[in-house]
Length: 459
Ligand SMILES: NC(=O)c1ccc[n+]([C@@H]2O[C@H](COP(=O)([O-])OP(=O)(O)OC[C@H]3O[C@@H](n4cnc5c(N)ncnc54)[C@H](O)[C@@H]3O)[C@@H](O)[C@H]2O)c1
Ligand SMILES: [Zn+2]
Image 1: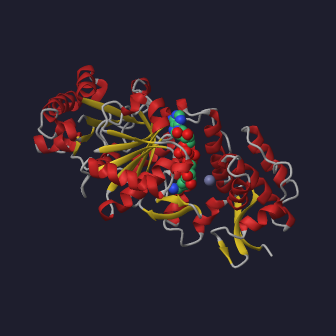
Image 2: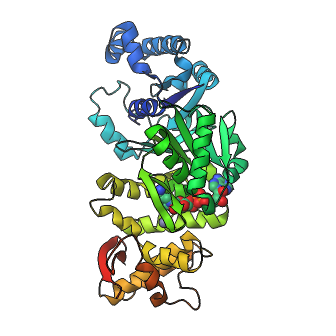
Image 3: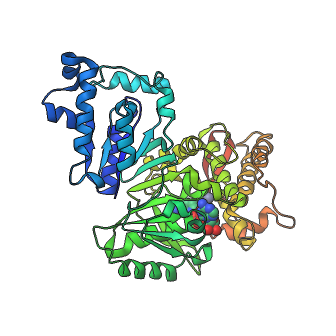
């Protein structure tokens, strides 16, 4: 095991994230400032008053060295002070005995706000700007975190190998072959890739693996792969011994911005997709944008279709890099996180907004016998559903074309394939999960930032 140090500018959230991370991983937690206060029996401002920064740094260094010699240190999560690693010896030590994750500061305005709110503000004030170069020199970075009722979501880059985060990692074979560095020194089992294996036979195989590895009630398992892997591993975790904890390491863009969050797990049956499953959120969702470096373009596009859908729902600008960065992923994921927070079990109706473009999209995927990818189907589905909104007088005449341009700009198709018209899809849509009688609830894109759940009869 190796310790994880959380580091970053004052008020970047080191203590909160550290505490939550330690809870997620079931590891001990130390906050260096608290350990210092306990050791000298004084509050940090009092130490500054007594001997200035020089005295504080001296005590901080001693305390850090002592902490690393504690018996349970190797398995711990440690929140450092905002300037602890300015000292080269401290930095060398931390990087030798553990790994350092740097929490990026939010915007300067947000940081200033947090800083003002924090009554225990450090006597040195807001140092983010002054120490910019120092903080920039750390390669493992957390761009943003979200705390959901049962999950901590960390979005970053360069976060390093998974090692011992879970007793067993179950990985998609493709993803594991493409990302050997991420799985170095990890207890690993592979499952095949592809939607065709998202079935109860694979679930049974995973239960068998859990048995082989003696996974008990208190152990944590993990998924490493796209949405297929996490749906399967999450469902196996939900059912093994009536539910054990799990961690999700998504490796596709779709899984990062969509499938990883929201608690849905499950598998397909011969009679339909995603028909069995359970809500069982992972304790930790660790999104490392570095995983995208090996993801085929085709799969990147699938994720981008969902990113555009999120931007459409929230009204934000659909702008992201060729390979989206951690911050772009986090900003986009926030749209789903906010909706899931309001409607965790898909009961209040809010969550149906995420289905935008999917009623037509799912029908199209089925009709094409899945030769059209999910992303392509969502892109075409959004545009077709915008056309429905326009015909119903809910969207401006120009809106479907404007929306089509956005998807096209990201290389996604926007027209139904030759030979298929909307009426052909109606028969399939009548079997949609969001139906009641012959009425199906669509989440219609009506304008950028306005998606409206609308019941439509498909008679
Ligand atoms: N639980 C939910 O809320 C939810 C939401 C949306 C979708 N889903 C489910 O997600 C699944 C689709 O997920 P997906 O698009 O991630 O597909 P996927 O898991 O099949 O992955 C797509 C392909 O990418 C490969 N791959 C994965 N990571 C890689 C990497 N880093 N480098 C190279 N190759 C890599 C995989 O081997 C696979 O061939 C569907 O089954 C869908 O039902 C679930
Ligand atoms: Zn989707």
